[in-house]
Amino acid sequence: MTKSIVISGPPAVGKTTVAKGLAEEFQLEYLSGGDVLKEMAIEEGYQSDGDDWWDTEEGMSFLNKRENDSKYDRALDEKLTLLFKKGGVVITSYTLPWLISDGIKIWLEGSHESSTQRMQTRDNMSPQQAYEITKERFNKNKALYKKLYDFDFGEDKSVFDLIINTDHLSAQQVIDVAKETVRKLL
Image 1: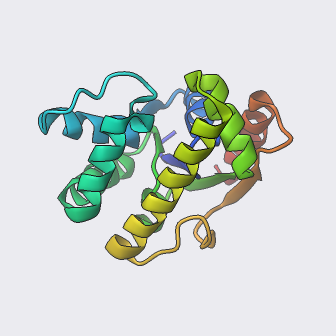
Image 2 (image 1 turned 135 degrees about the horizontal axis):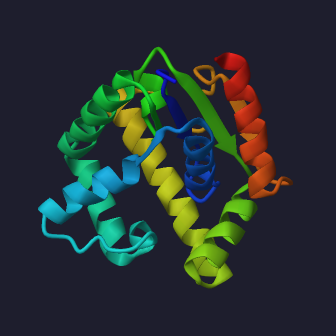
């Protein structure tokens, strides 16, 4: 397969799980935009260990730094665009669907309550803490990408080939729907 796939959606909606499932099914390389951004954070002196780093005080501090200096997001998006255009990858990214014109683009959506529950379970935190973090990350990212690229993250879904509401589906059901769509689009 020479095409690439990008998975986007709000925090804790299941992007990584679906992306890894598609990568395995179609023998593609999996890349996380968040992991590439965490590598940039390490270069800036942050200790960005663990999948839940974004939800920590230090992770939120780096998000605040990005709000004031777009060089991190621009460098990330340039790198992800080049990797995407080479083909053969599944990438999770908040911004890539609006920046590329080819490939397969999938948006995962769900209620804030579902994202809160996923984060609470995944990152072993209280419901209130998970709720506040998912809400803050979504709102800050939305404002950041509006300022940086002038698109409405979470509202403008016109660029997507498929939108899946994950609220009442298991992770495997979401992966299965995504697989079926990718097969049709190929």
